[in-house]
Image 1 (cartoon, rainbow, N blue to C red):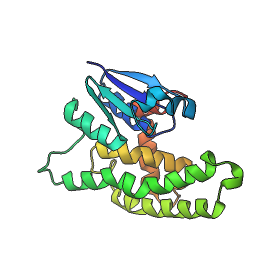
Image 2 (image 1 turned 60 degrees about the vertical axis):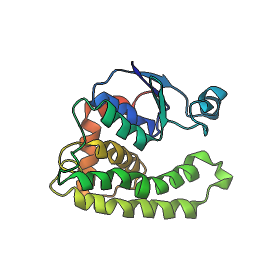
Image 3 (image 1 turned 120 degrees about the horizontal axis):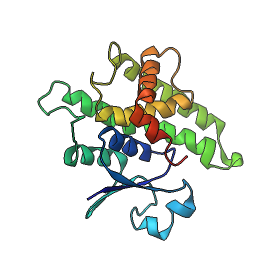
Image 4 (image 1 turned 180 degrees about the vertical axis):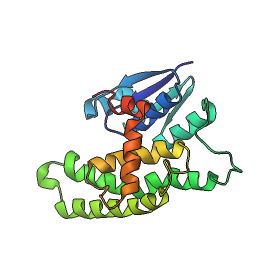
Length: 205
């Protein structure tokens, strides 16, 4: 049974297309516009009650939340790993960085996007936006330190990089990965040079 990914560009759905490309898994892509006419349609609300993406269908399974989808794919279709064993010394740090993404990084990213792109200009709050940018930059400093003498978060490329690497790429585009974070800058460059990422990030654009 072929996996089906419901997707819109410039969103967390790119994490899933990236992972599927890295694992060379066959999948069908339902590319939608990042616009209410697609995401809030009755058809898509049948997949996700809030009209969000990504949604992954796998036979009788339909699942949303990008982190949950990454974990699901790695357990059901891992085709080569990208996740350390539970007794591996790196396993706790894999979990830490995997969840650091949505816990510490994406909340300020969401605020920046809302007060830059989603709200009409007269409702955007520059003070809120700039505070979120400062919080986002601060959130990246521990990651920069963790990447000292490492190519990826736990050494080898893993599912944690799918989560946090995509967020680092987005944060860099927002100007929140600063020049005093050389390890993180180099990490973003390594991420963008991965063929699977380069393909996933341009889908639907």
